[in-house]
Image 1 (tube, rainbow, N blue to C red):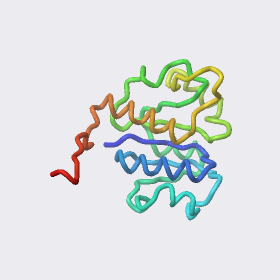
Image 2: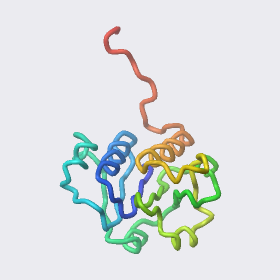
Image 3: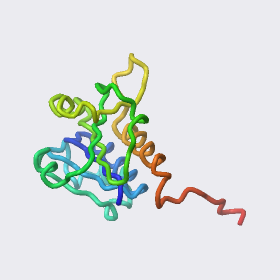
Image 4: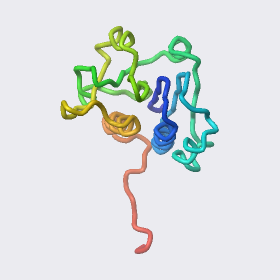
Amino acid sequence: MAMNIVLVEPEIPQNTGNIARTCRATGSVLHIIKPMGFTIDDKKLKRAGLDYWHELDIRYYENLDDFFAKCPGTYYFCSTKAKKRHSDAEYQDGDYLFFGKETKGLPEDLLHENYESCVRIPMLSEIRSLNLSNAVAIVLYEALRQLDYQDMESCGHLTQYE
């Protein structure tokens, strides 16, 4: 299995490219719910994802209804409007981590319907939000930490001194 990152209507290609690279580095699946604020052939998107784009497990959906019809599972909705911290959730392999568009976040009706599954990253009150790609990395790596970084290389080595 793998963790699942769900981007709802992403707008900035560089963020999506950075998230794609994080997904590739962690073996996570990237789910993109349309519409997007860019095209997949956008140079900025590919540059941020670098040479990993062709190795990425990426799936596209026309809208949220299309996604929910095709992807049953456990969902966590990441939002500054949540009351529960991301680190208080108990993640399992295969869970879906939702993130909203950069300018508005996730739709409030979606958050209301799933409020017990909403999580937030703690931050100072005068800050509106974190960059989307940073937020994805923070929540994803907390989930992976809880799963003991399953199937991930966790020990590096020096290359000039071996």
